[in-house]
Length: 297
Image (cartoon, rainbow, N blue to C red; front, side, top):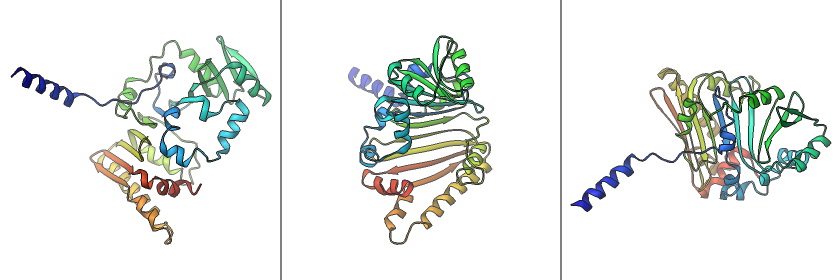
């Protein structure tokens, strides 16, 4: 009887146990300002080890990464462990965890015209329009100089993401290598309003809160889960997403019918104020799915 009772107690405890959520490195988590409404995180170290990256990106030449490495002496694929984009809707900062030894980074930046200046005991490299602040040998922040000064001013009082953002982050699984959390408020992405990407600003305007994550550990799994202001807004968003998927399916060349199957791996559902877009791509179809979005290698 005691064994049965113990077994029942353990079973109930397991049923009530919450899933592990994604974690932000404490060194950059404590730099997140209290007015943050948007967080975008990338676990680079984990991402680079996934089969999807190794098979589809490891040997791909990416000019932006090459240029960044030449200018700073830092190769994101080797020297960066984690990135966190932080925004309050008006200004934004990119926080990074990696190898930022001064003797490696400063001469490279200065050689490319990035002057060095200080603020409250920290070294900043760059100009008023764009600079890098070296918090310590493994933590850095990039933004315009004024945003960096504000970040440094608030560094001692920051306690990590505000409660509403922390609640959203808790919904993101621990094994997500790329994720985002949006707590509502004024966000305007820097895209041409007349372009396809400009539609993202109109989509964000209809969203109150939301999360997005991708896991490339085995195949490609992803979920966008957003809450709109009303049922009507959620229905319109669901319809717009399904229309985009339908247009994409129709644009597939007739001689590549396998690409049309990739669109079948995207599902959109709506319930009350909530809209979910789910992607579940098995390892055997990841190449086709990525080719649809990124083109051939």
